[in-house]
Image (cartoon, rainbow, N blue to C red; front, side, top):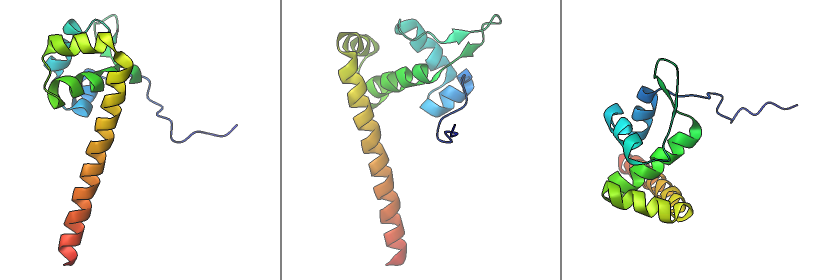
Length: 115
């Protein structure tokens, strides 16, 4: 059996790790949990939140709707509930475009150093 080295082996992430990954505060994550009913991270007996990969994907969708595209919370909630697949698809496209933009910026900076 071959070992998949590309697979993320971490099952759960702390709220601090997720906040840093998404780029928002921990308080924002807790607030979003109250506003978006589908966002329910696992909690331990000590009420410590444990986020899984699916939760992080949900947060990326919310982040894209609220922070990148500028929707109000209620509008984002309504759009996600009405057509979740389309919103997720748009989020993936936006992430790819932002990655391409970052790569182009790095390339431009490298070319400017050469010239």
